[in-house]
Length: 292
View (cartoon, rainbow, N blue to C red):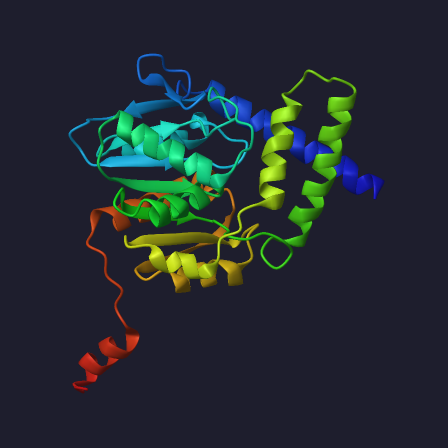
């Protein structure tokens, strides 16, 4: 157990170092010319925009404990052909705090950003927590989402949905957070980390039946070695009326970074083309000349 805890701590510290390094390598998230602090209720949300505002709007939504810079490889790719809108989720990056963080609150924040930019509807690409937020946007604000790419989302939690090793790591990390808060460690904002971890532990709690409310075309994406169990992803896909499914081969939960070229290409293919969901039965019947 001691070896596991030591290995876990090394992995966490390595991930933090990578995140900070990625943020330092680009201006995204720190671009005063592209950024704006938007007042939302008693708090605020920070967002940046890139590209031509006359083009189709594309909202990019990062994952838990992320920030605008985590979507750098997507901003670089999509800003050429889209008006990219990207924000720090509530309690992340430069965005403000809240009494209770929920996925529905963050979805409402993105609608507030679209209102601020006077954008009636947009394409949405979300990864992990961002994928959850995208699904909620499509369910609760169906007229505001033209197309959605939801990469590695989950709509419930627990061992039937999340890989056991991830649940175990989360348990140990929450203990680490509590210990750092007790000793008043200042190396990170541990109280925010606690908020983010509690969110993942307790939410989301979305019935599969709610997915049937989604009107827009959806591309559900996952990897073949993901944190979210494959069966759960397939159930999400199967309950969305107009959905396509893409499973990234030889990839992980972090495919937006590690396999960004193929990831971005598949997203662009989905966004750029009319939605279709051909049926194998019909194609086979057409090939052999059989009519129903």
